[in-house]
Length: 297
Image (cartoon, rainbow, N blue to C red):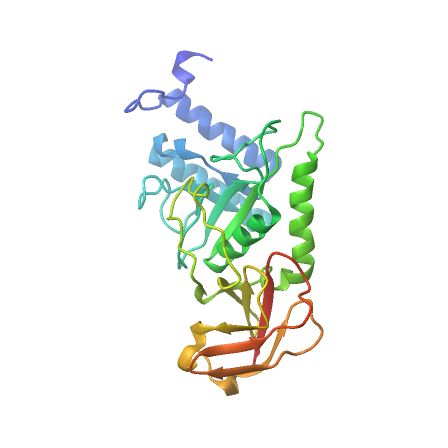
């Protein structure tokens, strides 16, 4: 590659005009030829001159309008509180990380099924895999906080998916077959959740020290006229949701019924000064986490 077209390497170097033009034209070619649903930018986007960033963003969104399609652009938050694109023009992306609280704006985690501290973004023979429990809990935790999960799977050179990765994906699919209603087409509720487990910190690359959740850790979502309370574990004979203590957010007359996804009967419940207490069914219909469905009148 001619020197003028090489990206900058030294701190403080600025891309040449030739590089910026090539960057813009390559993106326009991808947009026109492939009509991507998503354009994902890594950390280096901040080195691109703002006028070029703005031009590419406008071109992509205008073309998507012509296609009558919803599309998304992602960008990094680096450092904390600083963004490579103006707020609300793109989805904030946290690499192998997450937000620890409910945010008013949506955001994205890109992470991997492997257990490497920074993610193995290709097939690596020696790497282990996250447990299905951890992947399910991470998914629910992110959705409850207005986040999305972009999950990487590294195929072998022949395109096949390693057995460990297949086990992860099938485990998530098995859980979603029962509990997908609490995830798909939902939005965050008034609070993200409750429980004793301390968060590991906002930002990138914070999954290494991520604590293991318990059945007392609950995450909320909402959809239609229902609130979903997902216990990140297998609860005992009954569960008390202390978020609803002293009729906080709900009155008894607001509740039409309480059930558990995967269970075909309503569950006994009471709402008092301790919170919303629900009797769990004798048989929990899934592993890793269970979702209560609180239907409102």
